[in-house]
Each structure stands twice: as C-alpha cells, then as structure tokens.
Length: 281
Length: 193
Image (cartoon, rainbow over all chains, first blue to last red; front, side):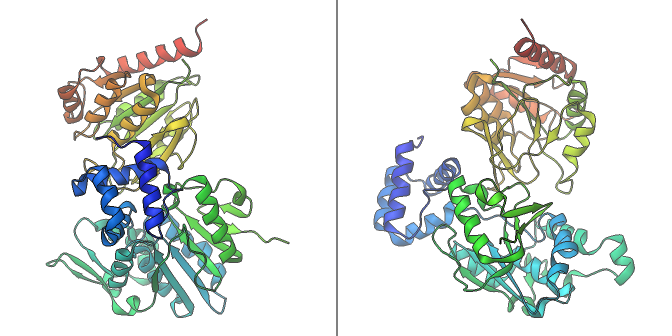
C-alpha cells in the first residue's frame, strides 16, 4: 500500500523521459501526497500507474494535471489587494503601459480580481495582464471565467473588504457585484462579464522548464502558493526567472506564508506584503 | 530528550482553553508548541496577535520551510494545511480540505507523528467535528504521548469523544491538568539536574 521512495523516484523519472514535465525538484512530500491521491482516485496500484504512464500519453497528461494543486479565490487575502491599491499600483500609474504576470494562475480568479482593481483605478486600458499555468484545463477554465456560486461566498466577502469599507461606501456608494459579474443562483454560477474576459492573455507555462516566453519585462509578477510545492533549488531558479523578467524597481508578490531564502533575498527586497527588485549598478 | 514537540488540536470551544494554556505557561517554556485550530472562515487574521498578547512566548504563523525552534508557539495559518517534515521543518499546502477543514488537525498530527515519533505530545481539545481523532490515534501508534481534554469539560465534545472512540489516550485531562502536565514535563526536560 505504501509507496516506497524508489517508486517515487521511478515515477518522476518516467514522467521526465516520456513527457516535457519534470517533478524532480518538487518537494518530495507534496509530490508523494499527490501521487497517493492519484493512485487512490484511479483505484490503481503504483505498478499499474507506472505501466500506464509509459504507454498512455493522454493518461499521463491527466495525471500531471491531477498532481498539480489548484486552489485560488477572488481577492484572496484582502490585505494584499489593499496594498496593491494603496502602495503598488500608485507607483505604476504614471507609466505609459503596465505589464502584469500571474504565474500559476490556476482557474483565473486572481487575474479577474486584478482586472477589477485596475478598472476601479482607471488603469485597465493601459495594462497588459498575462495569466499562465502548467495545467491546460486551468487555462481553459480561466478563459471561461465561470465559477461556482455555492461555497464561494468568500469571494464577495473579500470583495467587500477590499472595495466596500464604510469610508468607501460613504464616498461613492456601494460598489455592486453586478458591475463585474452575472450571478445566476439557479444555475449556481458566477459569470465574469465579457468586457473583463476579453482583456487578459492566458497561456500554458511551466515554471520548471519555460523561460520568460513573453519577450517583455514586467512591472508586477504575482505567484502565490506555487513555490510551497518546490524545493529550495527550484525556488531559486524561479526567483532568478522572475528577477530577470522584472523591470528595476518593480514588484513581486508571493504567498502570504512564502518567503525568499537564498541568493535572491537581497536582490528582491521585502517590503511588508510584497518584494521590490533592487537597482543593481 | 530535547527534541519533543507539543501538538494541540481543537475547534469550537477550544479558543478559551488555548488562551488559558498560553496564559499560564511560563516564559521558560522551551518545548515548541504547534496549534492547529479550526477557525471561522472570516476570522482569518489577527489570531496569532491576539494569542501573543496572552502568552509569555511569541505566537507566530509559520512560513513555508521555516525551521521549528524551541521556545516558540506556532499556529497553523488560516486556509493552509500545516505539515511537519523531516529535519524539523514546516511545510504549507493549499491542497483540498480534509474533514471539511483546512488546516486539518489530522494532517498536522500524522505528519508530526511520522517525523517526531515517540517525542510527540498530542493534545485534542474541545471541538465540533471529528478531525483530529485519526491524527491523535497515529501519534499514539508511533509511540507518542496522548492527551484528550475531558469530554465533560469540553464546550463541544464531538472531537474528544471521536478520539476516545478510536484510541485509548494516555490521559483524559481537564485544562488545569493539561497545563500542570506541560509545565512538569518542560521542567523535567530542561531544568532538572
């Protein structure tokens, strides 16, 4: 029943040689947990899983999608969004254009949160927003912009925390959800409005293998709760990628409980809830 | 002996007990404590700060890959699972809820049991669901010391009753007895000659 260390290594190796994916530098424990889940969900033995991965490309793609973790929500950690509004975006607002990259955007809720924020600040037209994820299903979901209504009341609680403080409401009245969403309670759906949906550019991107595929520099990169699944070595490679992809004096936001250790901790300077790329001479 | 760890799990009705425990533990309390408490969805921040005010030692929400240190009290951050990994490190994850809970007490307890084995002191307090029961059972399986708060004292006893149903804890204690036990074992490990 228990999966041995050898079997885990074998699995990583098979995925690596038969596909473009490489889980060697995922944290061993989290990778193991995901494999255990795949094995349990598919009612397979580990031997059968290994055999099937070798021969069935479609199954391999599905397995990779199941191994990666997809958790996100609208305006997750409202304090981060308040910081964006009050500290980060004001520093960028006078630029001719603003480039933002959501790396590991999962099903896209954070990308749409950003677009709402940009629209409220009058910055949406000059901003280019990119959302990437390793998981092709997640990219399709992001493009659809349709989410479950039930169990997601936190989206609207967060929205109110960010936009409808007593002072905000007094100043401009309550910001209503229907400005950005169509809520269909009968069908249990939240639909993002079309004018937001046509704005972002979504594509697959694998932080393990792919470089900056956009050919541009960014003013802000957001990558939250992705690095927790990577070991220190891979984290450093990703920080290097981000560092190379950012303009000087631009911004990086990672998860509330993630931190930068190692060589990039001095080159990306922590300022409360975000990091700023230092000028290097 | 100086590699023990204390795990405390609870949900509804546990906040006052945790507050009492942290208020009464002395400044020289060295054994690291890991709290895994369910909280209301909208009470996501300020919890560690509130507990810090009561406690002689700092209460912190760990970052991913932080090392576990003596004299510190850690609390699982809202909306993450908190794992305890080899070489005394924390790991966080946003994987699916377990027992409708994230953080899940089972997750923290089972991961700690496999790493710290007989050096775990696992405590289950008041709570409204059965998360934690399997976790404390595994602590016992790995040779750790297990305490369940007396169900008669729990504000909500679902959690403690669920635990007792599937394992035999070393002690069923009141909150006062839990505090006395913790102070004694800390003194025995760090201050006896």
